Image 1 (spheres, helix red, strand yellow):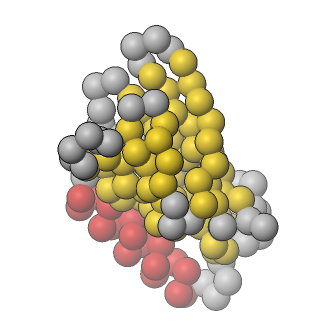
Image 2: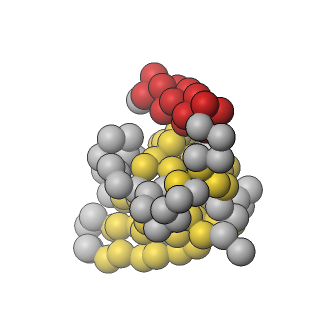
Length: 120
């Protein structure tokens, strides 16, 4: 998983550097959480640099990017998902809204994925 995160991070950096203005940074991200045991979902918006609890995990958002020419087309968010009790990290890396299974949270009860970036 760390290798995939590194590849995605390098690919995003290279893509942004080579295509001047190809991606914009969002000020926050809209995420969706799922409790797999009871089937409940919850949406929340987290500002860049912020954290929030969704069901039984803490999600921190480091960065959110989206295509400059199509703001609603896709989102790439760098997330850290951890246990609120002992700070065990369940996920640390890039998630892609259009391909949530590409680099997904691996947790037995909870799932979190990116819906979109927002900007103010």
